Image 1 (cartoon, rainbow, N blue to C red):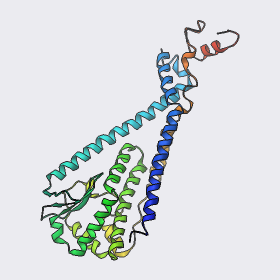
Image 2: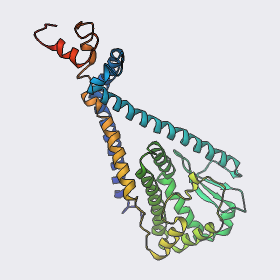
Image 3: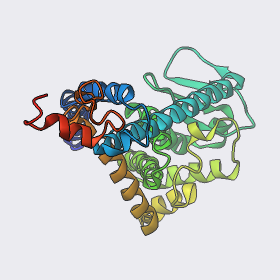
Amino acid sequence: MNNPRSPRRQMRTVFHLFIILALFAAFTAWSFLGLSGLVVMTLAFARFCHSLLTSCLEYSELMGLGFFWFGGLVLAAGFMYAAIRGTGEALKTRGALKRLPLKDRGGSIILIDDIASRAAFTHGFLRPRIYISKGLLHSLDRKELLGVFHHELHHRRRFDPLKFFLASFVKDTFFYIPVISYLYAYVRWRCENEADDEVVLRMSEPVSLAGALLKVRRQETAMAPASITGHGAYNTGGVEARIRRLLTGTEAAFTPPKIRAVVSSLAVSLVLALSFTAPLHAGLNVPDRCTADHCSVHADKPGKDCRTHCEAPSHGH
């Protein structure tokens, strides 16, 4: 049953690898095009700028230089925020799992020894494992349980917990770009729908999974953080939308971002992208090529006038 889908999965894997290689090549080229020259240029300006208002504002290069470091600071701040938030969520999740009455025998399926709770989720980045509660096992019939198992097994095979973590990290890194939050929600929404489709494909009927979802929905569990269960992950109705999609075959359209969010995201992205074009022309005009040491005429104003005087052929310096 997997043969018709295997070419599609292979194409996705090739596409993901292509994106990673393209980003690595772009970063490498960007670095060689002038990052070292940009650092030298920054140090030169730092030595040259005795007075910001009298010396540095005359150089257009300084504006580009400041623009670059501003973009770098914004990007670094977002990365630090994502790292702190991601670490906090990981510790919170680990603490929640430790508090659960787990029966771990080292396999890929872990039993939560709690008859009162109904929960099933997949967790783990490099080695994802399926967690299912004893209460859910007792509340579902055989076909419903099989549907839940196939759903979580799809998440496990596709390393969806790792995808969710990386998507969340990107969302937090670029928290100042509104559209990124919608893209994160879309990833969660798409992965859940694909897992549901896998169940329908394997069982040839959607009713069993829909019944299992309904039983789980009746008793919302607080056993695992939302980062594990995916509650509230997307904006199309959550579990109710999934049940309706399984029973009626009609898929709720994903709510697109508002025009204002798209416009503001494009504007912020453009500013950020432009700030990193500075290495393309770094080192072309380093200011300490003409300083007061070479030009006594304009010692009180070592700016454009000094450079023009020093570079004039008639003066010979």
